Length: 129
Image (cartoon, rainbow, N blue to C red; front, side, top):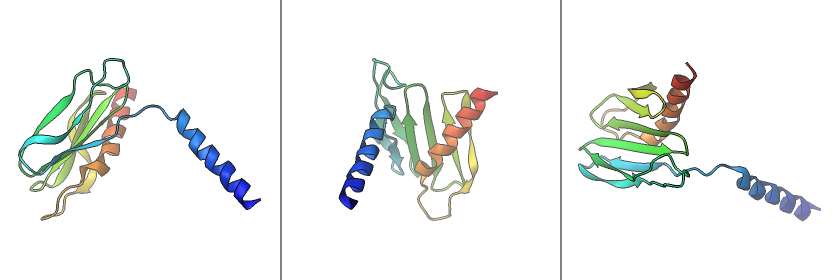
């Protein structure tokens, strides 16, 4: 009986994945080194992603930037090793703005991946007003 319950639950979990909309994976594009980004937001002309042309970032020293997109929007979150706050923007009515109250600790590398959700919320708030 225990095996049957585990298999049934596993089937539900795996089956639920079929109903999740296609979503591009977030990329850690800039990692504190100047030059070409280590990753880019991919493009698709079939409407499966927001961007129609691949977005390759040009990074500055000490800047950490993460980006994400879905079929309708794109977001970025970034911070500088020498800065204090996280900043982000979105394609849903968003110019660059400070993302919440999280601060970059002196002498540590920022983690903007955790701030992408704040950029997404800011975009959702802008589109509902």
